[in-house]
Amino acid sequence: MRVQRSLSTVLKNPVVLAIGSFICVCLALGASATFFQPSTVTQASEEQAAPSVQPAVVQPAAFSPPPTSEDLLRFNQHLIAIAKKVTPAVVNISIVKTTAPRSSPFPHSPFFDDPFFRKFFGERFREERRQEPRRRQQGMGSGVIVNPDGYIVTNNHVVAEGDEIQVVLGDQRKFEAELIGTDPKTDLAIVKIEASGLPFLSWGDSSTLEVGEMVVAVGNPFGLNQTVTMGIISAVGRAGVGLADYEDFIQTDAAINPGNSGGALVNVQGELIGINTAIFTRSGGYMGIGFAIPSNMAKGVARSLEAHGTVVRGWLGVSIQDLTPDLAKQFETTDTKGALVTDVVEGSPAQDARFRRGDIIREYDGRPVPNATKLRTYVAETSPETKVGVGILREGKRERLTIVIGQMPTDVAGLGEVGTVGQRHALSGLTVESVASEPSSDDTGVRVLTVRPDSRAARAGIRKDDVILEINRTSIKDVDDFDRVTSRLDEDDSVLVLLRRGRSMLFLSLSGK
Image (cartoon, rainbow, N blue to C red; front, side, top):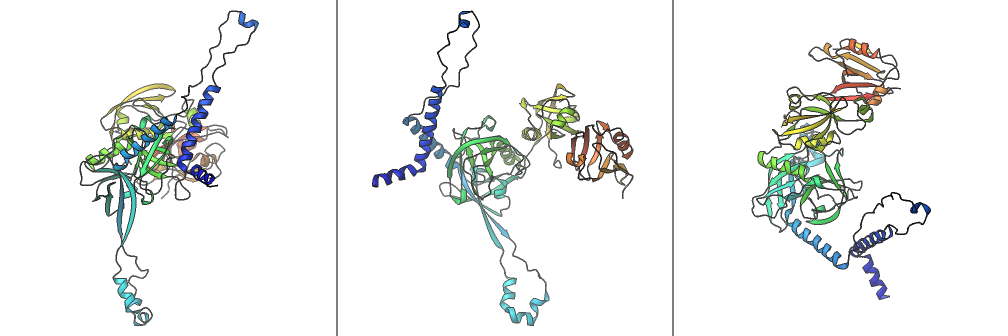
């Protein structure tokens, strides 16, 4: 009975289970390799006697033989070596934020000085209100030393609100840190401590990462210093998560929890390939989905913050959007890859390079452009004054343009005549007015006043206050132009609309009935 209980205890050990599972997978892969070897038996038939060209035998993928216990031991020693290399360069960051005392809903009320009121609450209550101290709130996260002279990369959301920043190294030394700069657009920040000869991590190349690659995450979850977890890369190039303006996240299943923010994600060479920044969770803890800012983005931001205290980004000078299947048809392409140019800023590098509205950018500096988000990231990471080749699709034909990237400007980031669309077509359900009729406006186009909720225009995404500038590539200057163009539309016609929304330009494709 004692032996059985001991064996049961061993089998429940998570390390034993993990190693056992790894061995089973490798044995299964080895067995699969044997099972799927091509058969050397051929069928005897009259067809074989005749001279003929035999089809080539497709060889299955070769699998390595299952690992031995020595292989597993070497692998385990390698993981230990990675942990020993990485953990000294990952620090604990805590911040203190001082907040104003809670104010009374009646801060200047004469009732507090009324003798009858003080009879119930006393003089002590009034004095305590006057002397209530300012409150101190604490937060905690992680950081990575990327320079032996004390420069530390972390998340903006870890340090941005702190009045005091304290860094605790792996050897328990404590330092007051100086905030060098923050970049909310990527959720990155740089702090510095007065120290030298510190252990640090070298930057890896995040552009080479592949799904399935093994990674190690190091941080301080729940205040547990220098915790190491292991997993794989689940996805790359994640965008649309809603965490930052520039998103190109690495997704990993390496355990990341509150307090890991700003910590290191490293590859099996111990190189820094990401800064852990967020988790997807419904419980408040680890659920198998974590996100890290890729090292190539973080490295550029960090170096710019170190040098300038702010981030210098490249600028193309175009408004862009993703292609939809309907838009792809309108712009004579068979797929939705690329970024559709909706506007070219006057005086911008794009205008100098002769970009046009309606161009589809498919390649940037030798890299394919899958969507608008990726192009935006590529351009932002390019140093100003860099000459770049750009591949475009213009009216169905491939062309190549050369552009000198500029520096992103700091700011880049009564009714008149009214017309109503009454007939049945793709733009039915809109009420518009001429923009030029507005007292202080020199613009042209028609502003959308109302959108019928059940209309095709509403389903396509047209909103109140959008300014329609073109319909089917025809310029719309005022309500008369709008009425003239829409009067020629049939119920089954598809319509391409160019509109301005705020400071952005946007193409929308409205399908026929």
